[in-house]
Image (cartoon, rainbow, N blue to C red):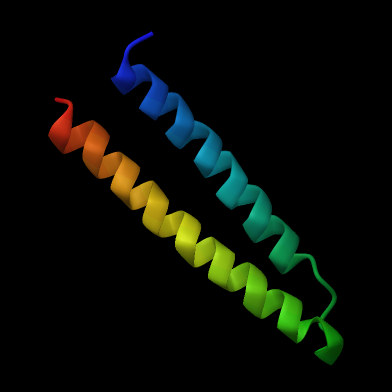
Length: 64
């Protein structure tokens, strides 16, 4: 398996993780006590989205 295929597979797993994170965040009960957790999950989602964008750029622009 070449580097492009490995990165594509990594991107696929990253997308699954982002989806699971989003579902978990949305399914938290709407209590004030959960606001800190939701904020932390939102930050994690942000960093994962940035990583996804960078992987997509590498796959589409640098390895094509």
